[in-house]
Image 1: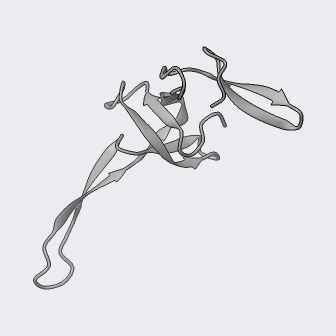
Image 2: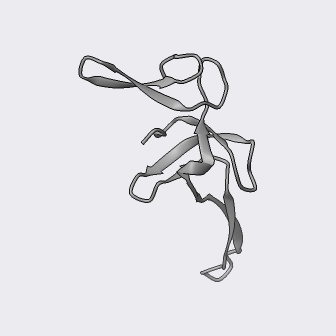
Length: 101
């Protein structure tokens, strides 16, 4: 996968398109990610005990990985991710400025 946890990503589609956020979780089998502050669901919880108040909880939902693009930390532009092989390691690089991500 080209997007990993703690990467900064920019949304390309959906109600939050154009916004950026940090990746909280990655689901490789489903090709989905959870991004902090984007694709928020408002869930209403009923009071369970007497005297307790109901509340509205905001939860980030999964988005498809194709709707997000990695933001390069050096050039601060949404960019494709490439790979460079150095010895035994595969290093992720920015396709625009060739900096390591």
